[in-house]
Image (tube, rainbow, N blue to C red; front, side, top):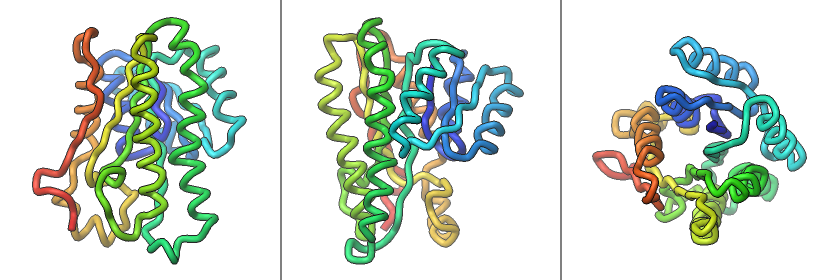
Length: 233
């Protein structure tokens, strides 16, 4: 069973759809209950199995509670996709401490909490996947994204350490490092200007699922994906 955190729209929703299409039951989490139900209904209409579990991963108690609920109602989590994400496009000086804290609690601490909520069972079963959706911002410098970069670079480091620690336990950890994707994280102005150069969420989701379907004796440590014409200037 696949648990996609941050599945209300965009890349997370597409990843859930792609996993459902290869026969996986999927659980979808995010803050917007209406959009979650819409995504689950869309998957069901296409013949898949999907369950919606609203969740704000900034709430430290809600994460393990939701994980236990999923385990009880649907089954043990075989694949966790950490995709929830928020950002602000401001200079370091203009970014408030509250905004830093919001991004860190969502993009970094929230995802760590999700991983901790499912990892013990994976270790016990000697099987599981942690798929972290990170960002090109973790490895390349972009102005007006200090807070976002801090969280994504943090998750990249966490994922790399976790991968080495989990090899002996049979748990595979994949870091996905995409460039610009045409989703609503961008302002309408940016999407209007650069939309044709951005990757499609469906294309990135297909790459994620392709890594999952590799033979069992290998793991794709990291997937680096860029728009065909390169990064946005």
